[in-house]
Amino acid sequence: MIDKIIDLSKNNTNEELDLLEEEVLNSNNALYIYAYAFYFPNRDLTRLNKAILNTNNKTYIMHYFNNIQNIDEEEFLSVILELDCKTIFYSLFGRKSAKDSSYIKAFTKLLQYPEDTYKNLLVYNYFNVLNKYNEELLNLTKEILPDINKDNYHELLSKLIKDHSFPIKKHEGYSQNIYKGHNGFKPDIIVCHRSFDYGRIIDNFYSDKAAVSSHFGTSRTGEYLQFLSLDDSPWSNGTTDNPDSGVYYRHSDNELILSRGSNANYYTYSIENESFDGTLTEVQYQSVLEIAKKIIDYHEAKYHEKFIIDNKHIIGHINVSPLVRTTCPGPNFPLERLIKDLQDYYK
Image 1 (cartoon, rainbow, N blue to C red):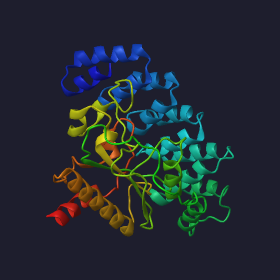
Image 2: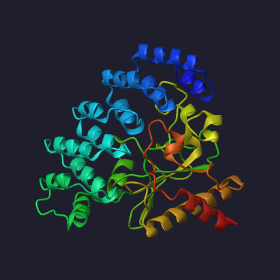
Image 3: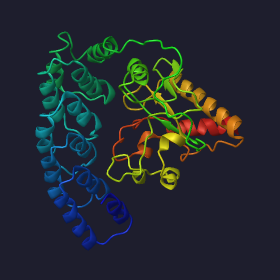
């Protein structure tokens, strides 16, 4: 079904799309419904909108809410607010056009839970990252910050996030969250990511439960660590040849990934960056630039070939798996600047 959706997104007639829509609806499959709406956003999605909610699949309801703009936001939110704290937060975090009223309802719901992380992240993202302001939401924020007001909210929310950051632990050696070697590939793509918390990045990359890793990670202060040998592959850019997976390789918008099909971890290098929306501090950007040079120099020395520096070989996670990685590395990540600076340096 997914292959059919992708193929028809390139060339179709209205009759073919009508028939496809019926097939998708009859499947009651959340992935198929979301993928159809993702590839054909200009269609009348009224029936798809209701169908995705009826699946009760929280993962794809969240992705649908994030990425499909032609929906009844209140109807979707009423379902999302009955899900767990993490899904509530990421639903609002990912939706570019979420209404102020949705943030208010979401924060009100999160206040009912003892877990602090996601209520803190929600208001920090709204006020400090998106730089929006709403008096009602600010007043609700007094439930977690009694002294907050219109004059100090940026400062207090920044301190709140800093105070709740993961401790930065030191680890010996490389992470074991790896694929040994590159399965016969020569890695030639650098993939950039973003995560909220540098301490948590480190914690996850050394955890045998998190099942995730990147070669490098940077902090807002410019500190960076290498977590894997460049001789090994990360657990961060995975694709599959299974059409019923959200990371099916044919969803990629990168022609190299499309042509190879195999798990993209095997032919990519990975850099994780502490950021909410892809914005990097200047010292952090300089660290990313230094890391990219290390990777390029390593590649050219090991494989005796030039590393191609362009937007096919230096990309964001969204380019690997746009169906389910739509907020990574964030809209403000300086990808074009990075490519240009590297081109100038190696010129």
